[in-house]
Image (cartoon, rainbow, N blue to C red; front, side, top):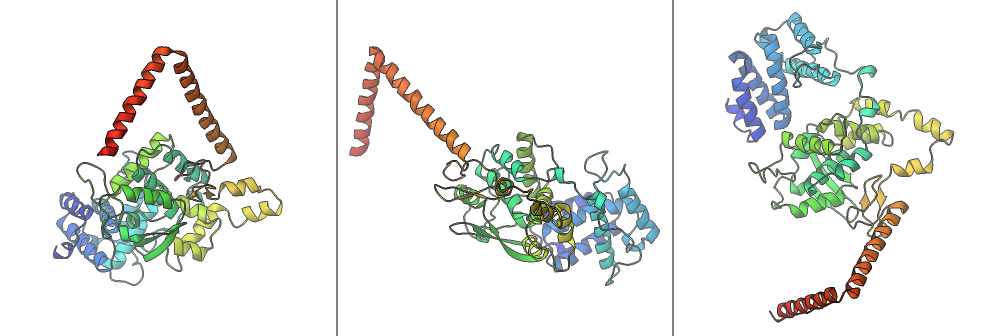
Length: 411
């Protein structure tokens, strides 16, 4: 138990309580805690440890015997229950687990038993487990989050934090643990963009952030905790105000904005990373994708996303036949304000900094609105001029206002 004392994160302490209360044997609990210590020694973050611990608790219940005594037949039973359409592990009662979640449980079993048996390769009990999605199981395109969705959510955001968070989590494509662990010192602003440091299970990396830069700066101005070592994303709740934003709070922000924008797509932090990776796979090479998203060299994950995006053939064939119009290409690009030169999200209509129109249509709409306001004001003053009583009250108001301003100047 001593090995776990160095974990100070609130999220980890809560998992220890859940582990203590879990309906598993003391032997299973002890093994899971030893695995915690192993992960911590290998610099795995609290969020990842908590996730693995949560999954192992569920596996322990299905296994119903010490992990050390499990045979291949026992593991087959556990995997079969996980893959079952009536699996009770799902946090959505009565619903089956998604294909990617089933695969994730398989990866956990392989990682755990490789450590438990102290082997370089997965031991026989688990080496047969499938840990790759088939083409059929991959997320289809209409489930992907797009810039249109981000713009709709942005229009429904009531705070600079919510606005900045949903834009940043999409543009950065970061793992949620990396994003929640950001400190103020990890964001460096320049004239046109920001550089952000993300530190996760594959080490640290610096990535460029463009369209969210202004939104991050606006959020930063509202923060009370501005020391370099303070967490960048903090909670607004009465109970935890000013403390590090947790996974549940982050998910709540995203789901709240999706509900307001009436978007029916799957909404969890990883959905944003998955969608951004699919989008960027249309333009970045696989080595560039590894650098941006923090995938290890040799990982085949980038090839999954290039397959999903259809980059290998679609763009080449369409361009050869002149079927991709300049308008379609421009819609996917960031929009630069002609007035203040701020870089804005693709498909946004107004500048996030100065409010000026970013398209011909939005500029015309803005001018029409201004002209209408001027006309309304002129009509109002003309009505005052026609009515002696209103004109008298208006003159009295002007005199009173002049006196107030004079008193302020004297002080």
